[in-house]
Length: 503
Image 1: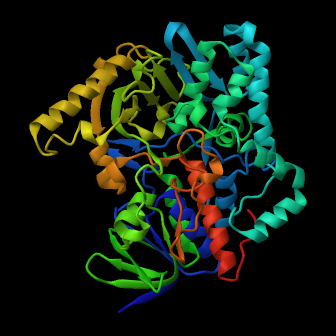
Image 2 (image 1 turned 60 degrees about the vertical axis):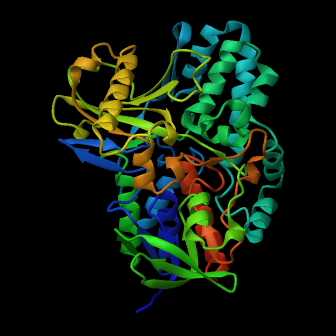
Image 3 (image 1 turned 90 degrees about the vertical axis):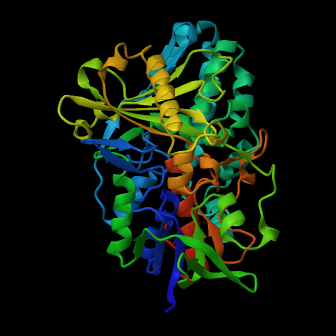
């Protein structure tokens, strides 16, 4: 039999789940199909040997309950609307940077404390530092006052423009600038500019000159307002709460189901074909897969293939998950760290180490007297595809590389090698297999210098086929794909005749 729904969502990543949850709460019938047995994609968790590990994301914006603070506080508002409680713990330091020549900067929630760290290191750049971060603050001030909605919805754009004309025009002007170009208007010290490049690279995997100023205004200003919060129970509780919200209002999330094709008739999406041949029909289809996986795999029409060079394909990751004895973590240790040993190599594969210790905030993620640690570096699938995944060579290579990263991390955690009691590793092949992403990539990024508004929105060339997730505006990161889901649901709801109320 052929089922029917108002909306089908392919993939239970955060963007897709957000789209489904908001549509379902509004009264539309939705079905989410997820090939894995768990939701969340890279914002998920897994358990091993008594430890709970964040599969990927662990720095979370948007959970501030005070709506007067933070850029929209999308997560807090969404879970409030869905009637789902999700407890979080404030993280006082977003990231602690460890850089060459003894240059260490903890990014405190209190903006003044963070800036004072930079002033002490670069007293000759104090005015430039203040002007640059004030520029990011001005972007935040605009974004935090504009309601979230679809930039493709003329009704939304007209309403926002009428109520916030000056801010809307100002934001449009700021989309023309990059973070790096703006920094170089005020700052000239090369070491400080390296740090600003690293601030961009920490989430965008591009230097500041390739990073839109608007994106930077969200990530590098909101941390001092809404702040960073860690969900009690780990990152997996976020998608689990979205699933509960969908089901509470009558929607379905089906796990272990693979979508093989988007059904297109007379130029419009009408449903999907599942592995095994079952067809499910809908008024609209939303793909939470990447733009490449959507149009090069799910849409059987070569006219819509993504041209080579349309986007920069971000690298993937090599990840190491560790269960360690708690004695290796000193008192006052921060949760998130980034390590750079050489400014000439920071943007090369494996050149920057990302590191988190979430049990510093939430001890329930590990057995008593233990900690969970997560190390990861950029990697590419071609570095690993020469190995058979089942071969001893593959396992030996993974372990050797993981051990080298652990040794490098001993710069901030002396004795770490001897404290490891459990180790799990993941390569780009792992990402490709579990996340269904081309080459396990972190996603498509704009070419350096491109306006952020050139990032694809939710609509596609196929009528009634929409995208959500990191292939769409504003890009990578959990809060960004959440915005994408809000935007997608807003556009679809208006098209189907029951507009969403603003969050």
